Length: 241
Image (cartoon, rainbow, N blue to C red; front, top):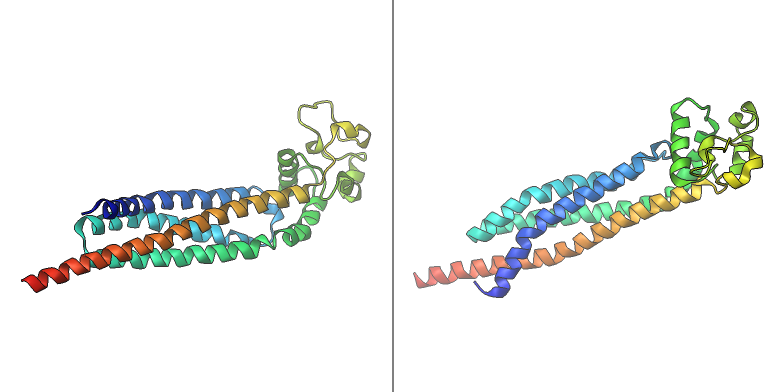
């Protein structure tokens, strides 16, 4: 076995394990990031790309064993089966990539429809309250487009014209949420910040998927080359028999 062929085989053996683990991590990261702000996302189909790449990553991790066996045994059937699995995984990754592009463009509209409604339900106790407080404290923002959006909510008029203390800047315990303390409040709205965060998460996931899809193309070519070499050896042996 030549050095070049040995290098191809070694790289192909390691690739499914590493790629599978990476895809599972990326899919989990996307789901975790989006779940933190689930109350503001009406379109649950945004989880589809992650829902595709997680099982794909698990399958890749498992079929790494098949690839190792097929390589070591130089099994034509095993290599052919391995190639079919790689092509199926490639198709799944392309599907996830397409869904990612589709739903990335819908994030802004999705947030515009849902955020105002959630903020209007803020009462200091319910689940929407917890979601809004988490959002404002994590992103250091206040209101939907601006802190002034709070002035049109039932909360503002019922709690002595104040915004929630989650609008306060970090490490300012003297902040009470009153609008005469603007220097202690975050004044930028949350919609733009959340949109930017979710766009970044989706872009990161799509970049990783695109990278591994490119490797799949070269991986498929290497499997084809080695399968042909194994077939050629078998053909020569039968002629010499």
